[in-house]
Image 1: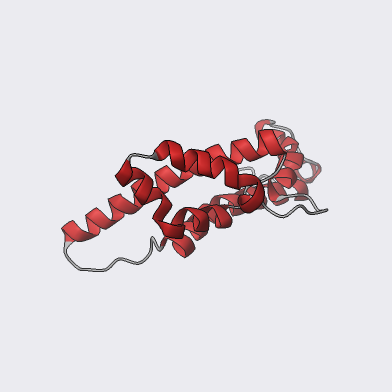
Image 2: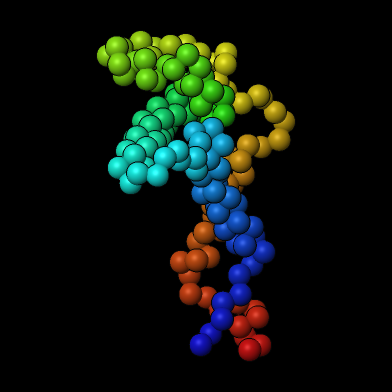
Length: 153
């Protein structure tokens, strides 16, 4: 069996991608308390899990829209932490769902993105930009080339 040896750039890219996968779970645990379940009845636990998972789906859809808007219209990146806190403040999401005013929620979201929900401008590249710059290393996974270390094996 041949063992593959990856270049340092590939390992760095994979680690960066892995961390980007971990971030939503960290976010759900910290801001949405997905790891806290109160009660012992299976029906209650099931209901809590489904409710939280539905909330995550809705929040992901809304944050994806906000991220798209910020990137395409403002050339900025949204802060998921700021977005989650904005949504939690005064129960915006649940109020919009209960009152049937999702259109108001979306218009408030769009108006608050530039002043409240974007990451601070900075001189260093964002995580997204760093990953975008390194995506070309992913091509190494698709090639079946022999690396210099393989030649000596």
